[in-house]
Image (cartoon, rainbow, N blue to C red):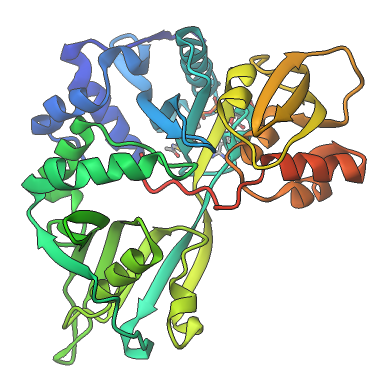
Length: 404
Ligand SMILES: CC(C)(COP(=O)(O)OP(=O)(O)OC[C@H]1O[C@@H](n2cnc3c(N)ncnc32)[C@H](O)[C@@H]1OP(=O)(O)O)[C@@H](O)C(=O)NCCC(=O)NCCS
């Protein structure tokens, strides 16, 4: 391949952004350049140049991923991936991903992660499906909800108040659930900016908090989409984010979203798979849930990744990990005592053998070993496979409430 691969410079930002929108549809606006640079440092861009034209683009967000136990580990967040349509299937994506993973590993990031536009692409690079989510749809004309607890108050707030009111709540929640991503100040600024061309058919973002006394215990943001059928209101509430500290807080936010006059249709594309709403209403079937893939995780530094998370059971296991790109390949003994793992290479025979992408799928606690073993992705005696499942599973389902 006779192309140049390098990060872009400041005067190439608009060309880079134009290359991204060429892949995903739409057109870049020059006024967004500055905000773009606050989100994505220039040295974390990967661009493929043919002469002075950008024909491939990839971004690498500096993110912090919460792992079981609450530690937040550096994660290289792959984003904005595209190859110009006249240059696809020549290996450009592969060379961009190789460049990005090498840089992330050299920086010492133990993890890489992404949300996929097409899930079939990234397993070959060692990414496994680590969180799932529910695409939730509700028609409030079929929903009966009891009143929420009267200790919880729900109020609208202005977007400008997000950094002072919601950011501390979000940061506290980010330590409590595997799969969570913290939002730095630049990300709150990006949400506040909410440019018109990113709203689709919806309104500006509306922001709502749930409070208990003086404490923020929940946050909801949504857009309204107006619609009338023969003069009868049929509008929609499209939830963009919803996080509650307790079940009561989440319920109060769902209750609010489901009781907005003229907007009977409620959707949330990224609901947690263990959300209790369906079991809190009189007709569970009125809350439709479609399972979707969420965050894909790739382990780069296996020792750090396994010893920086905690475990809900103790045990010992020898794992043989294959990795085409060689970051995590090897045979490791994992000894978990008091929920903490000691991990080291060994020459002992493995109890289980799996690819790094399969380990990525288990890493945040998703309960799926049985399924993965049936798919042939985990080899080992039944008891050893079960032990692997028990070690990695978490009581709370991992969930990533922030697509990037
Ligand atoms: C998807 C896309 C990035 C692929 O780029 P590309 O340069 O053609 O990919 P490469 O030639 O480097 O292919 C690398 C590997 O991925 C595979 N691959 C490429 N596109 C794929 C797709 N859409 N689905 C499944 N596999 C795909 C190739 O077959 C190749 O496999 P192999 O090396 O194991 O044999 C490009 O087609 C594109 O920009 N599409 C539009 C935007 C988009 O979908 N972005 C994805 C964001 S998540």
